[in-house]
Image 1: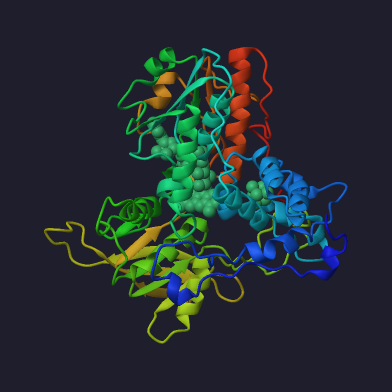
Image 2 (image 1 turned 90 degrees about the vertical axis):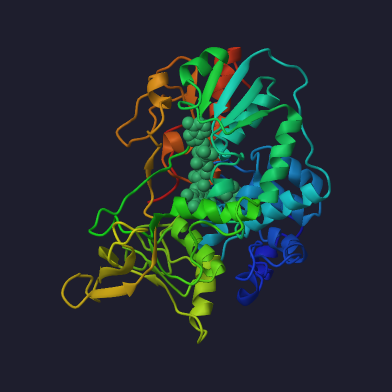
Length: 500
Ligand SMILES: Cc1cc2nc3c(=O)[nH]c(=O)nc-3n(C[C@H](O)[C@H](O)[C@H](O)COP(=O)(O)OP(=O)(O)OC[C@H]3O[C@@H](n4cnc5c(N)ncnc54)[C@H](O)[C@@H]3O)c2cc1C
Ligand code: SF4
């Protein structure tokens, strides 16, 4: 570190975000352009270069955090990028989207605000791209072995890049019309502009990875036949089977799953629609679900110009500080304010807006609808009835509330991989007791040469875990094909985040 006393003299600082009234009128990322670089050197210098850096443990990729903090504090951006890319294929994704379990595990966070690790990461990645230092790294020689990767989310992309660079000929099969998985059609533009994804895909194409989009393996193509055409197969199909809300009135028109709604908003920006088929524009919206997917719906609803919006969370409001039950260095369940929540809070203060984002301890009991008509044979939703916990934590009489709603978005989480196509049957794959794809300690399924990476095996998780799994599964495939491997394997299939 350039200044060994940096952590004593420099307070933690975050880069500015654009003003709320400006950013809710567009879809660009919320950060203010040019706000990060002027502060990030001093922020990196807050790293104490601990003998035992727990941030390594917090990050599933084992990112070499103190090393690149030191290099940034010394203005050596080129080597910082080299050390960052040594463990992370896509740091510009995680630097924008990761909830940064590394920061919860930072030793400084025991009694001070943590080092802004994620911001250092994104600064290194963006500067490397802008300086033209992220170039294709094709293999020196080809192995003559072939691999099909099914699914182009972060797990599939990481596996494909590792295996391509190891010399194998890799084709990624994706059922959507564009590659990227949830990075493309789940995560809104204001969290990560798709240009970051597109240039990574360009890099991968230049390295030799082939992309076959618009192919639903198991439906458009027989998965068993695919297996015979390739020496190995990696299944990285995600965990998109959504949870339902089986309450009276669920059949009413105007109630949609978050993953029916969010991709349409992203498709408008891709140029597929002028106006999304499902939109919040002018509507009274209720989002059921208090997690990150709900927050992504909230930010999207605000940008589409809803008449009102409320987000319901069945859980009580978490506390602002760690509790004794969730000690450092675990990732605690504390009250967190996403950029979308910040927007909703600020808009709620404005007299024109009708925003009641974040109602905690709220359970939906039924939907109420309009009379059926030719267009909506079951009627359309017009209200949501909920019970909310009283101050003593109990639900009951007096806690009922009715919210006006003509659009309801369900963001209740996911159960595991979808089972609608023939993929699982055609390969003879099994589900484990959690409903995710069963695999052994080396990511291998019961079918010879078939491996599983990412949410499909782990359940809905995080991008950083998907990349880590993709890297580890690639190492397992390389060993299967070549007998040994030098590829890194940062996580095992049963490794868990550091939570209490
Ligand atoms: C709305 C939303 C927002 C999120 N935001 C964040 C965030 O900010 N930060 C974070 O860390 N995590 C976030 N997550 C979680 C994160 O996106 C996932 O954990 C991660 O994308 C999982 O990667 P994956 O590659 O395993 O699967 P996915 O990204 O789901 O990709 C799977 C791919 O497989 C394709 N596929 C499925 N079946 C087939 C088939 N039969 N044939 C061909 N292709 C197929 C799918 O179309 C998809 O493209 C979010 C999740 C959601 C739903
Ligand atoms: S990938 Fe996530 S956990 Fe790892 S260093 Fe970056 S922000 Fe931290």
